[in-house]
Length: 487
Image (cartoon, rainbow, N blue to C red):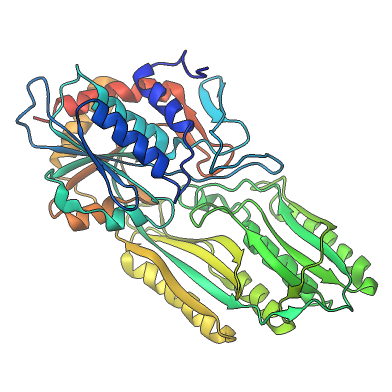
């Protein structure tokens, strides 16, 4: 039964509800890509998908705009998969359970996928329309945007003829996005120097970091929220400085571009140290709760019994892992002097995973200036060199370019005029700290004119993610008006 059937415009929300029913975490886009291709072909449209499940749909112009220059539409199919502690949900199998809460649509205990499900829904509604005047459309729906923009990096732009693009991966209806940062993702591999679990450490406990707010690594990075992976490293360093604790199976975070909400590791403890370990964690929890009383008031450190692992990090490797992790640059690293109030560069230490060789950190640097990205990455390489022990730093995915602001953009001029007529006030033109796929398209297609139109979204990449459905009601007429003016 439809949850959103009472919301308008139905031509957008019906597609959003359909997308919510299709699991589409990053790397799991085949089912949703197949659905989009079948949707398009059922309507007589040309549709293809590539090996990574990026989809291209082409539709002829209509209602007087058949001979207008083509317009590229862009969104991404994948979503970040986060859930509240204790929620049972399989993101590879289960649909998102939608809820309406006043003016907002949210999900029951999980991330919503409004990033970028709402944007994709606008595109599907345009492709489905028979009465909206628009130029020839080339809809590009990329895969694995949330994991290093892998789909856009491989997308064959030679199949596109358009020289202007409207992106729908933005988060507010009060402005038109006209420029943004780039990013680069990297991994840090730290060897464990595995040893058998010693008989001298019979007590196994699971140290858990819980209760954090998380959020988007770009839109929320300046809010000074706690990073669960860094909190875990801080706790491990506090313990290792006082006790001979063995560690195993570090794990935390959902994705490189989401501020990690939770993290954990198994500890092996000697009986005579058990009370002291609990005391260290209790004292650190109190200190952290004071430090983050405003930014993350529900932060918790928990210890619970665990099954003893067969192997643990060597003492040297455990210390190296805890210290190196704690020292990875994180959060806002520089503020823009060109656009006051905007973050120029930041880094988000997004995940830690146990690997056959030890542990892997994954992190994303966002910067409005390409050289800043590489300077930060060079710092991490220098840190790894100092750590020694075979620590390796490697780029993951691609080096995504920034999307440069063009004040003379014809597309921006048209969109601003349409915005004023539809919304009844002037649009703010914004250059953002975030990193989108648009810089990559502008590099591949010389002279490409790009803007992004957004919808009011909140708490992206977290279980608190919402979309204001009244914003969709406002934005859909704007979308129709903009495309109808593109002669």
